[in-house]
Length: 473
Image 1 (cartoon, rainbow, N blue to C red):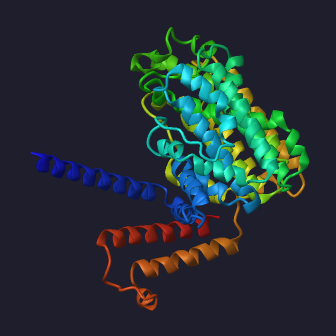
Image 2: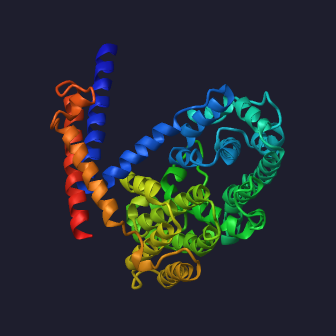
Image 3: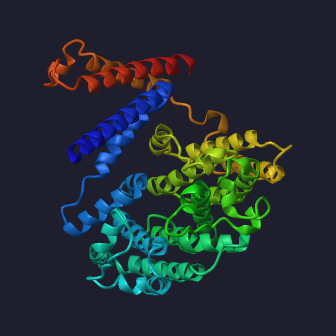
């Protein structure tokens, strides 16, 4: 019986793997323009998994890859003098967040841990047992590696990380026993868990001298950056959070959701979908109010890789809000941006112009989806989208070194031609034409037939896609 169950489980896993593979192939067929970006993201992810030889830093960067996914890629593209500090900063706050999120911890223990965490990071032997699960549990069990790395940082970095950890821990402690009721409390909670992250990062940028010293004092704008990301996550994760065991922790403010329901969990019921969507759109409008300040903050960044580090999560956030707006699937599961689109953002967002265009377009997408006849917050939504688009226009006009909006995102003919030739080259490899594989020391007949088929499909899509781009643009 046990053997039969094991075989059934294996068959199930193979079927699920085939379904995932089919889904990926389908996505490529529907969005061939994303194939190149997916390839570039795959290579960047592989590069991010190359670990330092030092055991302490090897653990830190391995855990960063495990608990932060695409965020790890942009961290590891930062200059080395900033990269290690932000890696440690992220893991310290991830540890603190793991304590806050663990609903199995008794309240008294949790409150004390949140208060003491900032001091514990100075203890080289500090570890936490019975906290978190999966990769987070491993992080806590071997947290001494993080504290060792922390103590190796420059004192100016240590001071920033300690201060933010202390303030965040006390803020989390404040909200453990109480429900978020007002919009003011909602903003305060998001400040503690995300706004402070933005403030700390700004101080690290200034401390390493890669950005102006003024960033150490830009608390208001940095706070808005954090709130924009945190509110997006809170909105997107509605169902996951409300079904959390042993007890849910929700941060949707009652001042908003109370306008549409007696209880927050009523939105899960399809019969209440109309009111749920009104509440969802109200929440998204509230989050979008931070978009203008986020743009202002990023317009002042000078260092390319710091800019990308800040801009990519912000574009992911507004893209997620555009996807979630008026989308009932938020109440059925976690709504996520398609992997190909994520790859495109991650690999193509390289300039201020790219950022402005993305914000402008996503704000336009949301505005186009507004239904004034049925949505009570429609007027406010349209206004905040207009504010974002107006800010984009102003930044393009007033900041030098920026090209006009109409020229945004256009590649030169030479660049498009080069990509077309590269796609032709890849096709000759995929179809084993002209002895290309043999010249590279690869057998033309050996290999997995399924992988060969996928490579041929991708090659055809690349050639067709680049042909259209070359002709139409």
